[in-house]
Length: 389
Image (cartoon, rainbow, N blue to C red; front, side, top):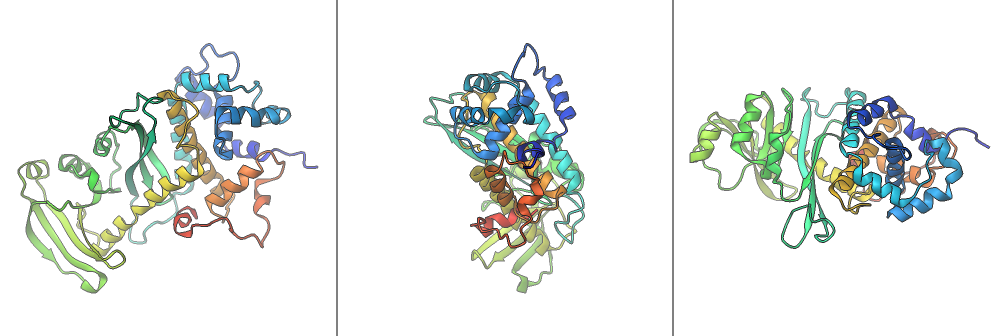
């Protein structure tokens, strides 16, 4: 019999516990807490994410059935749904948000040498949001429409490693473009965004901060062409122009030249028009950069399918944000372990195997030791190719 650690304990051992404790002290998470600490709360919620528990009662039932194993994974308190519900509602969600950023920085360092585009040494980000619909009567604080509530998870995804570098949780009424106001831009980085983020005053701030944007132009764009560059039309390019905006407000908000590229996408049989403030990269590279924006859509699809963020264990804003932050932490933690153990299997496969062997006492690497093992459960290769990290 293997006397080692359980799979769950091995996963949690990759967490810098002292950094977590710093977050707890910063937001006074232990104030007047005599049992069921913030660390135990994190462990229980991480277990719920890894095994996709459906409710507080489900969490309570499963963990009580394994009561004799909980002490060895760091859970010393007796688990009850009322205690967990109270903790989710009252412990400051920023503890878990800040800790998620600590894990993100660790993952960023691990994946630093991975190359995304051969033509680029700069970091490429995709910025977008996903909306999670909620019941108006249960979540009245999450303003969206008259008949329903919703939250938005705004995410800045590093396309080099598919790790979120920034995330913000807001109610559904917050427009996507407002996130550009709180985004801390990185000098020389590329920000790939869709048409919903077009606000030329905000885009100009990116420009003066020495960052680059790549987006699609709206159909009613008013502009004056000042120069046309040569293009290879066999590659799908139609034109590559330097333009000035001529609309009254756009011309004041963005007084400098913008690059306009028109491209025919043979796969979708559509003509696409891109705008960027980068005049150095080739036009086809700019078009290919925008094409990679689809990876953030796959990221949202993956976390919705494989983590517990579409339904919640509590109805308060604090409980919802706590659950989302811990879900993101679990995603990043798995990516860290996958990189450190040099696992070739997809993140989806890793999560599925963990979920069915969470309390087994076997090394994580041994789950993948069978050379004849095939990713039979990777049922959607178009989606899961994103996570072959």
